[in-house]
Length: 168
Image (cartoon, rainbow, N blue to C red; front, side):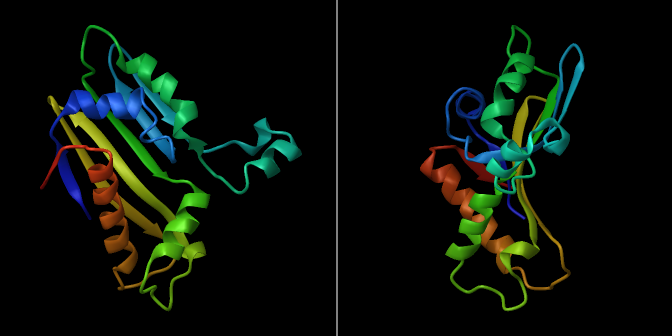
């Protein structure tokens, strides 16, 4: 697990809520505490879509961050800083499969279908912002190849997007 403290909160929040830096991610959940508690469950609801619309989603289970981002921005913006928030992002199904294909030494007993999610947890509390990686596999394995590859992916993502962080 990779865990870090974000150095420049204002820059990070700009990239997260206004710019497109995080738009490739999907959102599992978001909880924002301001004058109310705002809770978003990112799971897509099949009942909402026509059969054609559902097929066009191509197996995605979660809403794209770019569609949920405006709601989060509305809840967070204002004169007062939120008391806290937690946003759990994850790679989309398409990007998860590409991530798996890019792993050089794939573990023999794990396929892309065994990866339930590759998560990036973003948490703000007490004036500090933290990011932590997480993986969810559908099978039990002792091999940490997927975890290590995901941690490296997130670190590289932060570096490419000029996100200041300090590992903790």
